[in-house]
Length: 246
Image 1 (cartoon, rainbow, N blue to C red):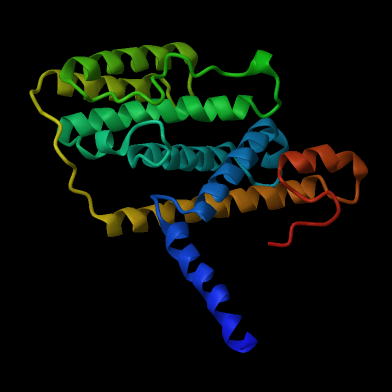
Image 2 (image 1 turned 90 degrees about the vertical axis):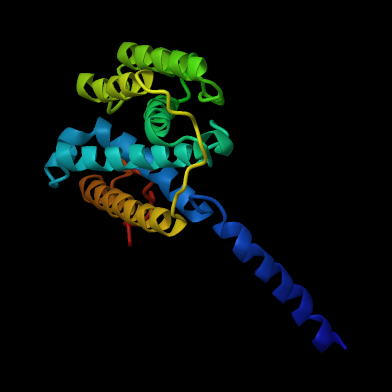
């Protein structure tokens, strides 16, 4: 009796866990990898001079930061971050969709900066997200989308967001002008889930490889054998008692 009772409860929960874990644009494991990469990238940005000696150049670090930003952009565009309702993203196509995605990119950069500056838990140096329309549905109507675009472009210009120099802001402005001169209406987007997944996985591979390379460089510069390196190793998500093994 006990032999037949044991397998049934153990196999059922396992089969229930698999589908829920893979749901969403990013699965749970990839979300955790993205947060880890953001932490390591922030630490690396503060120590870029030291890391250059290990061939972790400014360009290499910027590549990681840009990949993270693009991941957050896609996360928002797919409606998985909770900032913008999925229905709003999926109904936008053409010039509307292009503008909305670019505006979501500004929101993602603001959230990235907010996360990076909140790492030290000092409210005086934190970056507020006020005015970035987080959680607002921007494309309910043409007037609302036009106003949302003007608002976010102005915020990006004023706040010096990561990845948003004058050139990048100009691309958002161009998308706004293209939409302003059109009468395009939002319709349901026709996206290919297989292409999205392939693209997502490639981007996450780049992020994980670069993050790991930076951690290995930090592991060599600030070895665990020196107690004074404990704080620096923590910043790079490294063990204080052993070298990085993977």
